[in-house]
Picture 1: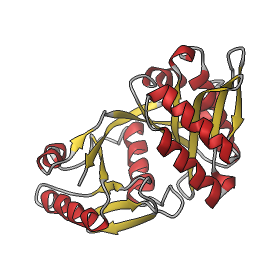
Picture 2 (picture 1 turned 90 degrees about the horizontal axis):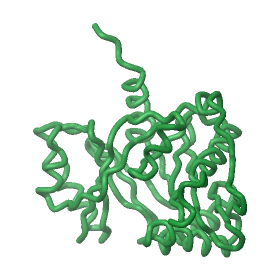
Picture 3 (picture 1 turned 90 degrees about the vertical axis):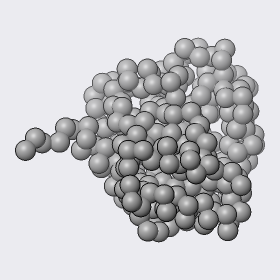
Length: 266
């Protein structure tokens, strides 16, 4: 019998620890396991609601999809089915579309072992005029929102609400940094810890167009890696856009799958 490749082993570890046995990643959220599906329910309307993981086949997929639609309808909450390319059945995406889900842009699932990044010499190196600082106050939440709007053209309100909720619930676990060019926020990036999994996940990091290509994204990855190391994590995980993908590949992250958010709106 052929042994699994290291990447397949790592993907299996990710699926078990970060999806099948996931813990809530937002203050007040809850994770439920219901008949081959793992879902997260947010505490607030602006929180993320959706399906994290499913263990389905051709005979169970359609009923599970419609059960989740019915469930979230009772909550009055739009939700997302977070699909990965290796999920079963192979035609799950087509089944989601047939049920009324709409696909957003796909992203690449990257994972890196922190020891390998450290060995490769990843360090915080910033362009002249830019500093990094942690988010610690409510006023910082406005800067996070400004950075999100500058980088992505949207998402500022949700970024502010998420930051304020984390600051109120557990300020010691905010793990968000701002890249400041003087008084202007040109990027913001956050990190989530997943206790018991050995993983930290990296989110955001988009940079204002006039500051791209100068190493800010790389520096934010390096800063979060340093803190994750101090906290005992072994792996970093990123869902990367096409813009971030080449940077992560150069740093030594490994592409394990492709994930596509399928959104359902009532």
